Amino acid sequence: MLRGFFLVFVLAGIVIVAMCGFRGEHGTRTPWEIFPDMVRQQKVRAQAPLDFFADGRGPRVPIASTVPIGYEIPKPQMKAPPEITPSGAPGKMGTNWGTGIPVPVNAELMQRGQQRFNITCSVCHGLTAAGNGIAKQYGLNTVATLQDERIRKMADGEIFNTITNGKNTMMSYGGNVPVADRWAIIAYVRALQRSQNAAAADVPPEELAKLEKAEAKPPEPKPAPSPEGQKK
Image 1 (cartoon, one colour):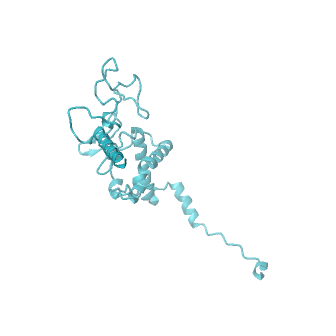
Image 2: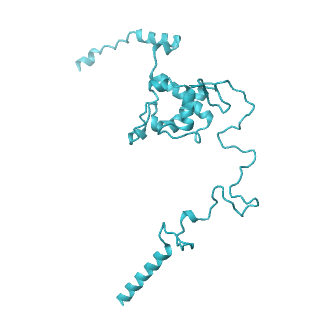
Image 3: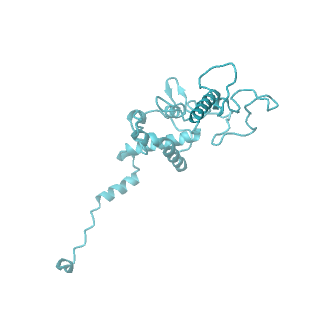
């Protein structure tokens, strides 16, 4: 009885393995699969024909007059300075990158830049752009510090290009960060760089006078302890 049960169990196992097939095996017939592979599941493949739609195409064209969230419709007639391309990115003039931020730098832009930098960039570069983000603490040793003299002197256009297309071990963020947010991030990075490499000459005269006055003011004398307190 036990031998017969064992024999049936072994035969059933062989049949199941034969039906499932072995991954990587080639054959002329479609294999039997109890759990179909993801490569053979019912789905629309990119650029593949499909009889479900009247035009025979699987991928569908975008709905008319719609654009991805966060992006602007291109403006073919927009005129730009020589160092700025119509896409909003400083281009090269010969071998030199364009400089300058082609949007108004105000409090709103800086706040947006701080928000997007903290979300997207600080993981690697750290909150002060010193290259000490949490990713570096877990083994990513190739993170550059944005406080480096080389990057502080780098043209805005080259930083924009690095964010857009990536560089070395840094991946491209062109598909994740809209153009306007890239400029906001660059403006905030410049503020971080200046905050960590500031001099007295960077302080406005009226604010510098307040600081000097505060430093020159003698400290307030502490009240003398009362005689009763000394007796106690």
